[in-house]
Length: 317
Image (cartoon, rainbow, N blue to C red; front, top):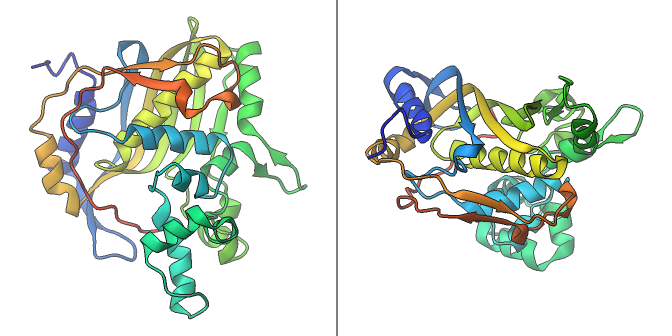
């Protein structure tokens, strides 16, 4: 057994215990679900001590990599993910189709058939696979009032190289123009307002660190994914800017466990963490836009078996 003081995964496990033990019970918008919730927590991982892909249950590594590459492309259509057999965003696109289906505007179709049609029919994917201005579009193609598009990553990466001591290296996905009732029309609102809303880079002693602020955090299903995704982003940006990876700091607003995950969380808490794996990036890659799936590998990942849980699709509230 690895002691609590030695293994960084205990930060995650202890936060699960914190929520179960002291969390406030809250309702969830438009569903019968409830959560236990706490507010304002932080965990951090020294990336020189292994890659924080959690080991107390198997985490969907292939999905993490493809989703991050999708974000980095500035994409907002699920077709890239579907074509790579990653279905974590399917329900959000299908939700829009389902609304049209209920009015009789489109033929009835199951979600599985919808996903198949996205894969096989480019025109259908163009119309129904679009999620609106979600993460990647805000990172890479933020629309301005004067008609420009701002590529936040294209701005930040060279600045990290040339002016490492500055304090304004922030990338935001939270754009009020496309969030909830603040959007001009319901059609212009993004399908899922960002849960991981902004991140900031920091350089010290030749190491690049990243801090994420996550306003809403599904601790059992989402957070293991988020930890690995932003730790991977930290490594990738450090790689192309010539720094060593430093820390990934994960700051939470409302961090919670859904009531249909309580049993799974209790099962996970019975497990001891195993050594973190090692991340390998293709040393030939010099530009953040050059990465492909095959340029990113994980070695030595030996997790406990997966623990399944149903996602609650609530529209980002």
